[in-house]
Figure 1: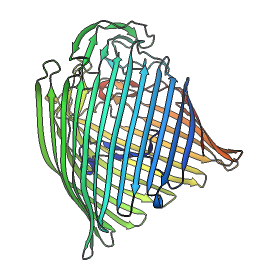
Figure 2: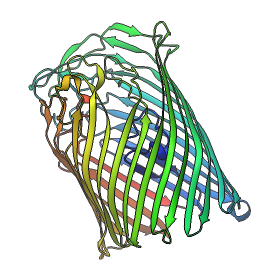
Figure 3: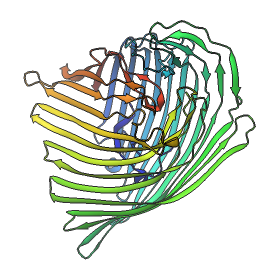
Figure 4: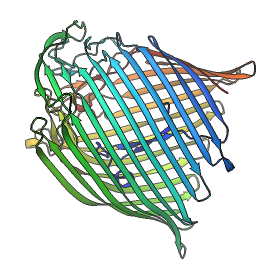
Length: 571
């Protein structure tokens, strides 16, 4: 994250806003990463970092503006970390280099971003499959049931360019193009637990993979008035093309135990799929859409009505790894409307409601499944939402009710085959709050209740059951305290709570609720006229052992107590 200024989370269906997200349903939401930009004030920041148990690293961040009126900007970030994590015998190495260039003229704005990053994980703690009739207790938080031979090596690089041109004061044309390349090499070994005593079998899986992606977006924004009605119009198109190449190797199973892991040597390969050197093309996707929208403002923009539509096309081809022949071909299109309403009775209160839908790319079987890489057909998702937002400056919040629907994907715990089993419908209520209890105490948190129900399952067997990995209750609360008696020093704490989750669609296997406490502190002190900032954080203070998630049908254990320290200074 060292290359990014902030992370924006768009909750709920957002296919209309940004187009169909690649490799995602687009129902739960999308993530927008905002790169750092050079500011008017020169930036030269150096940071040293430490993480338990012996992970050390550094980060350099340099930004400058130059030219007439500081029109040109450059921001460069370099970072490196390496060492053993808080999980026993797990080692991680990461490298990052990024450059963000920009030009801000009177009518023209341009940005060019490029990034190179790599990460290697040796003996990473894997996910856990379950074939027993009962979910086993989570092992000690530090326990590593991975194998000595397992590793994952990831390389990622991208370049993207964006531009805007103000044709008129009320008309702006914009465009963006980007290219991304990703390479993954690894040997994975995920245990399958057979009883509550933690006995398990563990097998070898090699998955070399490459993704190449080209994307673009072009359009225009305009503002106009017709009588007393204002208009904010947007129209354009977006396109996305990606090619996935991968192969696999399966090895024979060996015995182990997640509570007392056994050291095993790498097993011989029992089967392979595809050329391991010249990776075969497994899937190819084309996503294309055309969109138009108009936000109409009434009564001095106190009432806003958004009307729009996006014509979306999803084309996905699948190929056999060995014969290289085409095995599947999906080509679906749909016109997806959107309707939104915002009413502002006062400057501090906004009431809203919307209906949005989209054609989403179908899921792909994960690398942990026996049918890894299998591409499933596209499907339609629909969301309804209504709520209220309050913002009184120092305090605010929101309340919303929502309903979303999407097909439900699950890895069968017995066959280890990933497939679609019916439809998942989420209905819920979300409450969020932020603000200052006092000038020195700041809060941010919320709670969500979700009724995630399955319907249209095979033979109706699991209709009415809870969806896999969807807790009914989630709550998060963070607090910061600016110490009044110690200048430039802040203490912080965060509590995370997640309710029970089911591991299977039959709802016979349940993962217990869990909670986690994080604490931290930061202070800025001056030494010989140089400001130095110290940060310390401890995640999972109580070293609680818990299963954090069962998304996909497999168990993911939460991280153990982890201490992190950093020291940074700006020149």
